[in-house]
Length: 197
Image (cartoon, rainbow, N blue to C red; front, side, top):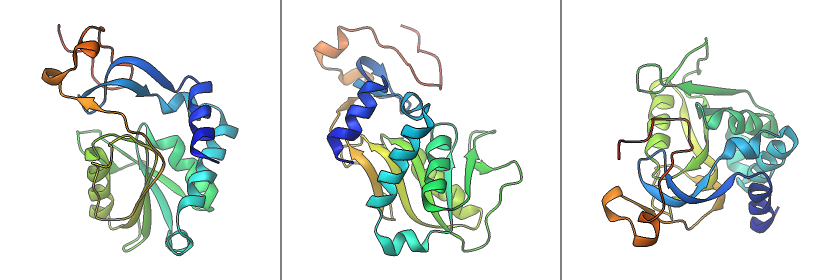
């Protein structure tokens, strides 16, 4: 799939929104990606995972033993990447604020892991997930995401394979451009409520 075909899938599923949004990182942006809308269709989700699997170099693909993703956003695409690679897929949860494996999930010592996200904005939660996987005994050899919206700022100590990279600026609340500040902010994601105005 070409990048334009992939973005057309996002638009046709109302997964790419325009306006003023508070992102899960707390930063503000004019575009919001709601990957759950894209992934709600299993056929589309499988196509996206297969397209991303094809971007990962063969030597890395052959080395991956298991896929691990952070809940909630990474669960569906992590599962689909497991399917595309013919591997099991586990997910991390944050019951006490830090990622951990639960539900009887476990990694074998040294098991080669692909850490899979839906969207990377700052890379912070991805780095936290990578550390949790390492703490659980896994050897994270690559990270993947449907969308890298970090503008190249997200840095990892392993190869990172996004399906699409979007150049979408994000801003701290006290650095908003006038045109964005003039639009009421909404937080469409699944995390915290809107801050008081």
